Amino acid sequence: MDIRKLQRTIVDALEDVKAQDIRVFNTSHLTELFDRVIVASGTSNRQTKALASSVREAVKEAGGDIISTEGEDIGEWVLVDCGDAVVHILQPALRQYYNLEEIWGDKPVRLKLAANTGFAGARPSEPMDEEDEDAEAPAEAKKPARKTAARKSAK
Image (cartoon, rainbow, N blue to C red):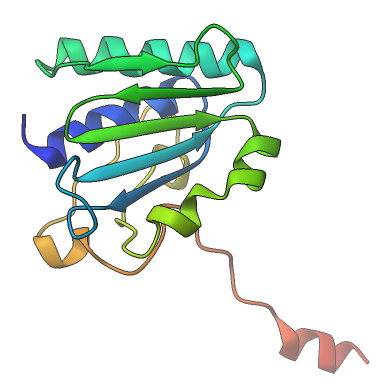
């Protein structure tokens, strides 16, 4: 399966179960074992298990292989090995403690997430070319610029 299709399938599966703070990192320059690391947060043991299950089912439906799943018995940190992509689903406290973004995050992949589209049911689109895929921006919503001029005039 093409890596872009695999990462899109995984991100869509995570979004379907309301994963939080989804980040995708290109790791092909760091290791030959896999090309992407995807990190997401779940709010409870039950949600992290449901997120892992959603990823497994979606990848299998798309024709991909699941090599292994680890941590589902406890559910605080679940890892799904999809071959060319490794998915880490953590609860927020563990994610902050282990800070996987620091290890794998020097090449974030820019993705459009369904949460950023403004209406429900929309599917994210793929980057148009390889330059967009390796852009130096995390897969998260941009914060609006501050309105400092309005504050100054209010004084």
